[in-house]
Amino acid sequence: MKKVGIVMGSDSDLPVIKKATDTLTALGIPFEVHIYSAHRTPEQAKDFAVNARANGFGAIIAAAGMAAHLAGAIAANTTLPVIGIPCKSTTLDGIDALLSTVQMPTGIPVATVAINGGANAALLCAQIIAVEDPVLAAKLDAKRQSDAKAVLEKDASVMEKLQ
Image (cartoon, rainbow, N blue to C red):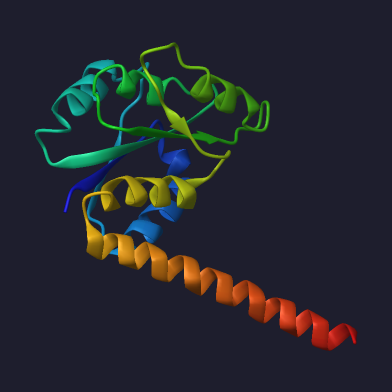
């Protein structure tokens, strides 16, 4: 199975990344996590991206706040799918990161999830990898069914309480 590369711009992004790693772990998907900055360690970020395919990665998650150029810097150096997670900051509540992550030039796509959307970034990576992995696809189907069941149980509980 291909592994997921996870890069965050700062250790302050770790709570968001934890949601991604928890999701990947639950699905049995291997991953590797690094801190690289698009601005402070551009050569290391580039090296990671350039060599990602050869190193067994099938997709990359890049999380950053504020200027949030990390996902774009990674995507500029690989043709693997890159999923950007804009992280909430104290300045503009993550809107700055969202816009920086989603507004990529033609030819360098970055899939972007919600602000602090670590779990969805992991699920999108899983869906990408599952295109070639029927066992993982079945796990994703089972998760969807389990999630739907949980919502319907809550619906029944609310209906019971209010009637």
